[in-house]
Image 1 (cartoon, one colour):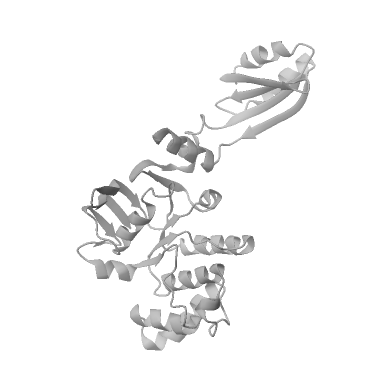
Image 2: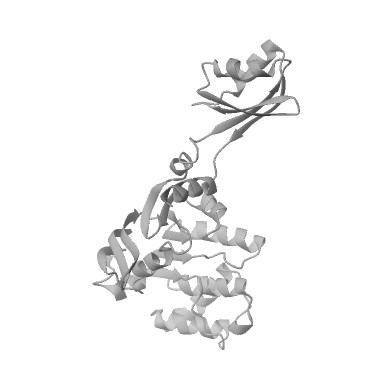
Length: 310
């Protein structure tokens, strides 16, 4: 549904985006993340036709963004970080205006506006002035305008900005439902949201793609994937790391500083080694205080990848 090929954008001598390439399939939610100033918003604006590329090509829903910009805009719903709202209008008047310029037939507008307002949690708010709304509710109106024409592609830039925790959870469920029949690019600084919603992530840094992988693939960048924290106590603490490391199920043991008389081990293994370690502890009479499985977070992977680039 979306294909970016060698996308490049220069502003004078500044190259904001350089040779960006990725694809997104139907029904996929792609997380598009990076540090501030990395080129995320510039890339999304090029994909939506709001900003021309200096070089490269983009195809959205079967249409070339630069040769067929109007066809692309009919197929795309775009929520920028700051929604394009007319603050003096009511919500109802604004959505009637958007539905008209989006080409929704006159006879369908009232039904569609009501449906969209209900979906984003604005039912009964038709007469509220946009300028009086909190940032969270302005985000809801921005999302309503993005989906009012029922586009097959959604590009969302910080959709949960300004929402409280309950609203974030609702927005997450809503985006998940939208993706059942649409393609979604989600850009956000809230990385746990990406972990909950996306199966694949593209990381951009300094205008270039530095990672394009599944969540599990990215996590492997963060210190070798799954690790196990083991805490054991015995009269001879120094012997514990070597004995645990000798187990066939264990690849590597990294001892840490002892904690209150317990040996603290960082264990790496291809499969869960805790049963084998517990069996060994029983045989040796060791006391077990903790056997924890640690899966690296997307944040750890992000910092590892972006930090390496810097």
